[in-house]
Image 1 (cartoon, one colour):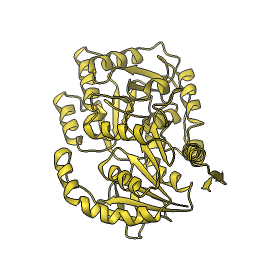
Image 2 (cartoon, rainbow, N blue to C red):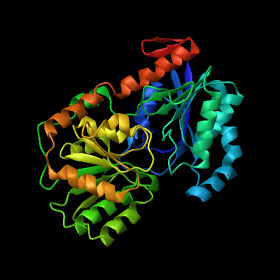
Image 3 (cartoon, helix red, strand yellow):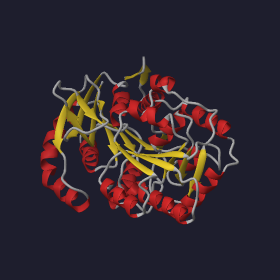
Length: 389
């Protein structure tokens, strides 16, 4: 069976012909590839970036122009190229047995429309918050309505999250991860250490408005105004369109000694940095199931997160695998940071719970769970890990 995956994720090719991208996308595409005999990847071409991870080496690649700009400018650019996208994508969709569409995104949404018109089996995987948030757009709302409407039969609809009750009839939960079993076993971690002095924290993710990093900086500024000591040190791991703005916010608040911007890191460099930290902070305004939560847990690091998406079941109750605060509330974030740093926490027990949580949530388990859902819905079998009629 052949799968055709369609994504707006920027990718680049090196001189040897290898395709690369960053974040969890390359590893998850490798996981999807493992379920099928052949793969076509329709991607957008970009300039080389940092922290790259190779995409599946045996896939066939089709490149699309990356829409220009953000927000309205991007929408206009997408509409300008839409017929080119349709002409380029349609032959590959027609030849494939299954179409895999990671959402949200304008290019994969167009892929859904084309796949359904051609009556193809689809795996739609929604990666943002299934529950509505202040960051929800008309496109994300339309995407979720479409998933509810067409779930079932040849249309496998999956959303990142966790829970005992399905998100909607015919829609399935799936966790999100970029951790392979091999990487998990090789990660250096210690469950026995207490809090450092000063505490060492990290944010992991894209530097864009919906990730709430500006609120993290505001929380640090609030701690500084209170005369809090010792002030924690925080590594901002990742890159994105707001990096310069966030760096300026740090300078304006006089917090240069508290923050370090690392840029995008590859998996090895990320693991090396996390091994020396105390806990992570994810102040997102919207989220599905953040891969960064599992990256932290794998290194025995609890997470202070906002109560969005799957955060409540993943983090657990207060102090189970971290702590929760309301999204967008810098004051509550500052209060929680102060409370965590103040002491009275059984750090070894907390770290053990975090590490144990990752054991059944590796990339291999993730891919096989998607395969199991597809096999059951399409009346197929999993033979040596691959879907078969």
